[in-house]
Length: 269
Image (tube, rainbow, N blue to C red; front, side, top):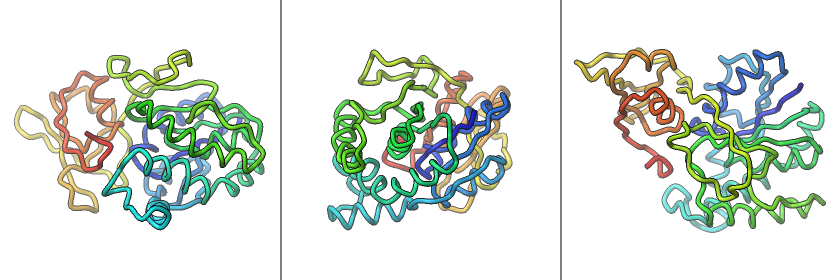
């Protein structure tokens, strides 16, 4: 089977998909990942077929600011979030995505839950789509805003709009069952997959600090917590200090390891 992944080029959205992509490859499926080129540092070491196209995070943010005059990083409201994920990003890459995916001819598309391009491509190519919830589930008003915003993008292309965004045949939760939030459409199937920490662009050495075994490090930025640990390494620690991304948060919870979190983005409280 040929399986094409779509994701926003954000590490907290993208890296939680990698264990699933690796597992599918190990089972003999042909796997490709589609996202913007800024995600190269997290993907090139994985050995997947990569489709780098579409706008960067900066370009989408700039387009949203141009359209509505507000910086999404300074005012992350529901309407602005919907314009980012379901409006500007879809407008800037959907047609190219349909063309590129059509030539690759996938049998299945897997999309992280804030990527609204993958489900549209699946509809255009008439292939099934699976949505992976790579972080905390969206609130009902956020789902409604995404659904309303992306609706016109389907209609403009002669496609049937989804009853709910993101829409897929199955909904995969990457969080441990004890932390799994309720998705607004309760009747849809929820499947658990393994949570693992994602890779860092530059591998960091882990430093043990007294009995707490807290890990920290810096990689190309001023934020004090930018580390990444392999999943098996979490079996040997008593605590982990991290940046609040879902890969490490869910992996630490799955291993029963207490965590100290220093969130660096609005969606990591």
